[in-house]
Each structure stands twice: as structure tokens, then as C-alpha cells.
Length: 419
Image (tube, rainbow, N blue to C red; front, side):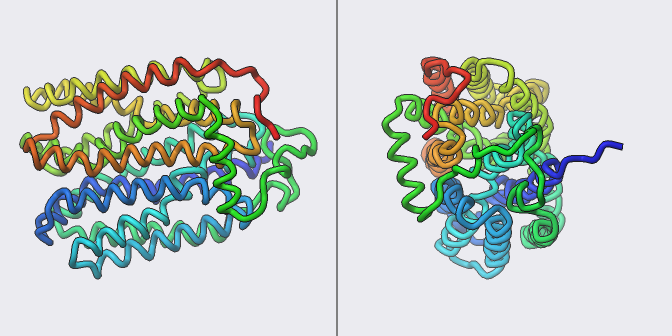
């Protein structure tokens, strides 16, 4: 029987680690209304904490990439999971809105950063020579897996008991993952005497990765990227990606549904239903990104997403559950499908050695867009007493993103920058 390459075990542990971090951030949608009712906080106050979390974990991404090179995969995963657990535990002590900003915005934002930004491309680059796109797609899809399984469960626990019991469930999963990481994660294939999956002989490709002060390395990567028009186009499109996904849908979709009389558990189930198709779409996108021009993949992803966001308010106003389900299918297939081709284009333009850090900055732009939508969605609701205009705006922006990506110059098979 052929032995399974250890790279796949690393991928599996990373997959479930990202699930845990992903469900923490995705759970903001089910915690928003309970926090509002129990503490009497205004929706924009709660939204700003969730928005800071989205922005902060994105901003920390490039520095996490640099720290990975300096400290190694295992130490970084353990430290990040411990930080995430600390933030979750502290939610039991909060009683003022600024506590939520510190705990959820800063501590949980920092703890989730590694898992939700640069970990997927790092593991794909260092543990896989072949099937990098597929590996990236599988890891990116893991955020959807947590959403699929746990959001309805969290909603039922909140309705049956309280948000504290739901938080306890996430804490328990975090503790389990901490010990799994401790037991099974290795820093590199070389540490256990093997080569990356699909590599037949020794290579200097990875060992040439940048070392040094993580802050200097991260800002040097940004300085190099800012000179490239392609970086601005990718960062701009990813800003809109974050605006139209985790920032708007992740934070406000459940509340949007509740405002039309859809119960909390049903709304959370619709979001988790998207997760089914998100998982399928993102894994398929990773497979396609190894075979099809990534610019055209992104063009169609953004165009279809924009159309679905514009149609959603009409489906909710009509109360047509069929069209709401159709939206959930199309939007779910597209939610995180943009990540594998964006990572691939970054790798092609900036080379393997720099791509993780520069993708970290591109992802920071993604989270800046998410933060704007998380906070801005709350403001739009407060002003208009509906989220409709926020969803229309996101749909129009997605059409703009499709134009950004299609004007990126097609890259040759070898990286242009590989210094």
C-alpha cells in the first residue's frame, strides 16, 4: 500500500485549524443581535468591533508571513490559537462596548490573523510542489466548512440557552485544536527528512525565503509591491471582495433576514447552506486556477457575485424562499472562490519568495473592505432602517472589481520577479 505523503497530514491539521478561526469570525453574525439585546449596545457600536477585527487580522497578515519565516509554522500556529482562546475567554468578562472592541477587535483579530490570511499560501508553497492550486483551494474552503457545520448549531444554542454557551462550544474546539497542532504540525518537510509533495529532488526554492526583522521584511515587501500596477489592481479588487463577503454578508446577512421576519436559526441555516456551495466552489476554483487563465476566473466570479447581491433585496422583499435559496447557491459558489486565483496571480507576478508577504498586503486590503462594510452596514441600517442600499452598493462595486482584474497583464509561466 502506498504511504500517504506527510504534506497531506499538514494540510488536514491546517484545514481544521482554519475552520476554528473561521467560525469565530463568521459567528459575529449570530452574536450581533444577542449582544444588542443583552447589553443594550447600538448596532453601529457592535459593528465597529467586528469591523476592527476584520481590518486588524488583515493588517497583521504580512507581519504574520514574515514571522512564519522567522519562528516557523508550529510556534506561530500555537501562539495564534492561544491568542484566539484568550480573546474568547475574555468575552465572559465584558460589560461595556469598548471591552468588545478590545477583545473582539484586537485580541481575536490578532489570534485569527495567521489562520485566515497567509497560512493557506504558506502551507501550499512550502509543503506542495505539485497541486498547489488545489491545496490552496481546499484550505481556503475550510472557512466555509466551519460556517456550514457550526453556524446553525451556534444559533440553536443561543436561542435555547444563551450566547455564553455558544461561546463555550467554540472555546472547546479551540482547545482541542491547540493540542492537535502541538502533536502533529512540523515546520517544514526538511524537518522530517522528506521533500514537498511532488518534488523529486532538493531545491533552493524555499530556503531562499526572506529572513530578518519581520517588520522590516513586511514593509520591504510592501515597498516592492507598490511599484507594480498589478498590485494596485489586485488590492483594489480584493478590497471589494472583502466588502461584499465577510464584511457585508458575514456580519449583516442574518440581521438583514431577521428584519424581513426570517427567524435567527433559519437565517443562520441559509448562511451555512451557502457554506456547502462555498466549500465546493472554492475547492473547484483551486483546481481550475491550475488550468485556466486566472484573470478570467476572477472576472466572472466578481460579475456573478455582483448580480446576486443586487437581486437579494428583491427576493427578501417578495418573501420568495425559492429565490433566496437560489441566491444562497450562486453566492455560496462564489464567496471565497476569488482567493486561489488571486494567490496564483500574486505568485506569478512577485515570485514564490515574496508572494506570501505581498499576498498578505493584498489580503489586508480585503479586510479593509470588510471592515468598511461591517461598520458601514450598521450605519446604513441605522440611517435608512434597512440594509438594502448597502447590498445594492456592494453589487455595483463587484462589477467594478471585474474590470480591475481583467486589465491585469497576462503573466508568463515563469515569475516576473524572483529576486
